[in-house]
Length: 176
Image (tube, rainbow, N blue to C red; front, side):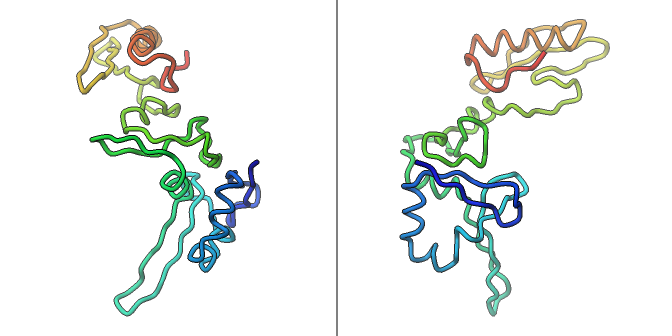
């Protein structure tokens, strides 16, 4: 079962969490004392976030709690890794903070799953050099030059083919 929570600064938006998470937050004395659920906002990146400023003698102190990070730290198994891990939204919806939509991944995996990408050519892994287009893909910190092509679309096709070969179907494939 899931619970929808309205965001304070966006009447048209809400986050979705599991009932188990909702109950945990409701039973947490500290989170209830700061009215965590009543003060969730949409961050500029779209995430559900709690923020407040506490005035002290030394000046202001800011407290920020990202809902997805709180939930993942508390409920999602974190694999052992030598690399720093990040929380990924499996369906890409940053307001869907249900347990089955969160996983811990490395930055490489996180970037590989990103759909939004901006470049001068309009394609991931494609650069313009003189009057031709070069396709390049990186794997295990090593560049794989896929060649030069007459059009950006041809280079993007080459990138997609190699990406599927190396990583399977991911969110980082170019839309042609």
